[in-house]
Amino acid sequence: MIYPHDFFPKGDLTSLEDLFELNEPVWEAVARLKERLKALVQPNLEGLPLGAPLSETFILFEGELFLAQEDVQIVFGDATKEKLLVELSGRILPGASVLCAGAVFMDHEIEIGRGVLVEPGALLKGPLFVGDFTEIRQGAYIRGNCYVGPRCVVGHTTEMKGSIMLEGAKAGHFAYLGNSILGREVNLGAGTKLANLKLTRDNIRIRVNGQTYDTGLRKLGAILGDGVQTGCNSVTNPGTLLGPESLVLPCCRVGPGYFPAKTILR
Image (cartoon, rainbow, N blue to C red; front, side, top):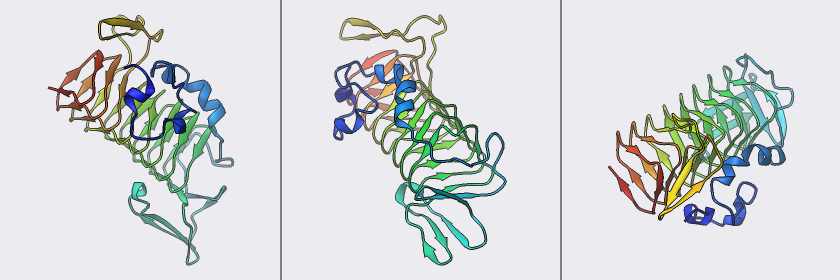
């Protein structure tokens, strides 16, 4: 009940071996994320201006970074549904990513996948991996040491640090993800906060079926299994583990501790 396969059963776990040790407790992925990102991230934004809002929109296509000038047309459709389209001199550029004017990139330790949209006002710090067809929306704040998988949404005024989002996870509005993991197709309601630091500031301990595990971590937020949904303005305590398909109703405080699959928390 504490291993990756207990939380992420929807797909082939071998695809997650860059992030997880499959025979170790799932929270070890948070503990080792920084070092794993160093090996995983292949920066591809060399030449992009750093530390201030981009004055112009850039296109990333097949490893080439260039300005979106008059011969470039952009259709700002839903990137997660592959409806973001870039046309250069009448030719569609399949899988082109768009880095909008007004976005801020603080360093080059960032890898951007295919078909990604980074909207104005987003601020990104590395190390950071952003998977294919993901949206980083206006006002998002990614503070580094993060893995954002394919077809994810990091939404308006959403802040994340030291966290993992697996394929299809969405934190669309006013969320905080601190040292947390979102499984496949997790959806956070507006205002969801995944707190990561105890008021007493000691190690996070998690009780599972009568046994207490010391994670060795002072900062650990929530680990949400595949398909978990949280209602608006819900809050999880540090060290909260929710099994797949669990539901957290709006304005609910949850945890700490382990909750099995399909739990409904009121």
